[in-house]
Length: 538
Image 1: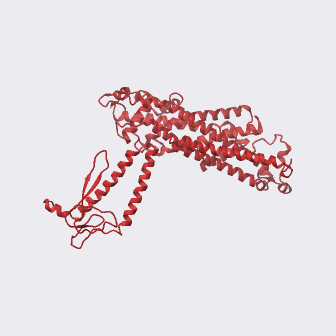
Image 2: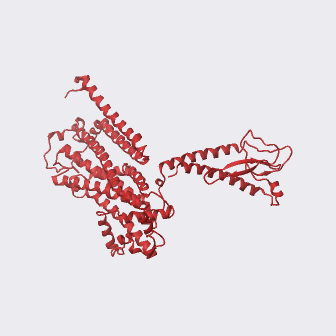
Image 3: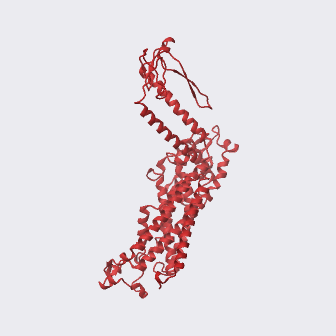
């Protein structure tokens, strides 16, 4: 085996050039997707998901680099040989190649074994590489399946703008709850019995997990609870934005997920027979989450039916957090996040064991073990992307509060800029509070406001009898030596007390003048909201 001292420099330079070229091309591709696709389509949540994937790749690369640098030090950590023979992936009686028993000279001289050999450290690095590739591929596949499932919902959203839908949901029409499409689907003979309800919800995941009646009824309940009935709102686009936001959470890697991955590696020892039960844990958890989501829709239908057997127009469901575990709708998303990463890790582990040790090894005793593990992993991947994640994106909107994705990115950016300008304006007013002193040679100018519905208000200053006001519009005593300094800051306005006396009204006291001046300031803020809302309207 030749070292770099005996390797041509052109060969080393060529390999380094190819590695750098591949890295730069990958980085350029990611930036191209962000600028040309995500920015144009206004998919900020997808940009966040892409940033999460890049962070995961950087983390895995750092772990691999750290393992490369410290593999010699780890190999020199010596442990008793009795510990080295416990929790092995293979039986003790199996025949190993002699290379498996090569120890570091330091540990061999002490009659001990290495904590992790150098060959073992290299194999762990291969496992990290497999995990990176499988996780990225699983993320893309999951999101593609979710979008493919939700494209069917576009036709259901378009149906809400037809005369037929408006006629069926007309509040002047009365019908029994069991006669509605949603009632026919959920008010069955098994709905009132817990023992029968949950098996039915479990089986419903595998055929028509989300029907048109489910979508339209949950849409109607969401709009009635948060926006008001009769509001023109594109619920399908809102669900798509919610899916993008949920996907950015699912593809992330949390510290507690890594803990379970380490536990998975530990239970790969021979005595635990993990190949018989460990691959099925993500599948069972995923089916449990899907069953709960289906049960939430049935419970909402039952609650609406108990309150009134006769409905106006269509069945109205009332969103609430108490339908979810511990009153937290996002808890189900954390379960999906855990299931998704554990399934990706198991697929990566099976792929690594197959490529590194062959079809039959200590990790897969029989070919059937590998087939079962891969088949269960693919099934979990399909159900998670095509069934559970879109179903969660829909049902999770039935919580007590709305998500911020109810606003488009344009509106969110407009509100954020308006908030920044409002903070600066308040800061300027507070600084000017100690610098400005308004004195009038005559009474402060009187304000006339011209405002229309479609145009922002305009202010006009007119002369008024002699008086003076301070910055907040409080009336001060008038005098011949009072003057108005208009070079320091803008005028604060109030209503003249002398004019009220002329008209026979009761003069304004200090509190009432304060109230009117504050109202004018609030009116100015409302003008800002009017301008930004019209600019960034949905």
